[in-house]
Length: 168
Image (cartoon, rainbow, N blue to C red; front, side, top):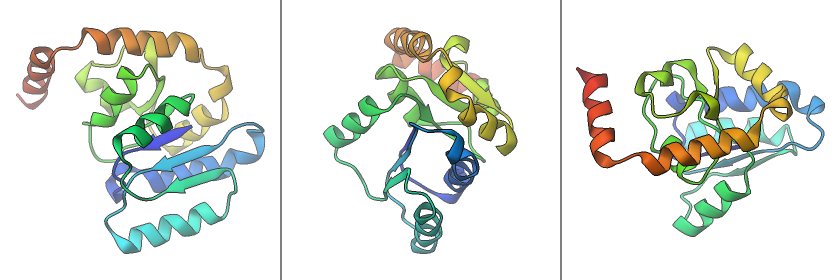
């Protein structure tokens, strides 16, 4: 399970860690990787303390060079974008481009970029915990294939239209 991108409080990474920590014992062969820079030193310390509680969480709290980021995404089985207070994410499109299944907040549906068969949505931390606990039951290959196909069809023109619709 991977989260990647810049890490800020509104992105919900602390909730993702808490959810994973609450169910980690039931996920024998699963791990959580966090990859991205944290600009706020206090928040970085808070996250580091939470990560220390679980040897199945690997945190790389720094900006990743392009190839290292691609390697992290490629190695993941699924990408989680747990944003608490935003709807947009370049991470979502990048994960789709690399053919990765997604776990996203329900409110991210507004853009309509991710095909229904490529994502598992959640509305709160209890649902995120449940999705993570049952991640092994998801049709990951089908989700990956659908996301890759949808990303291959996205054009900048379509992204512009979707963005305009969202903000209109």
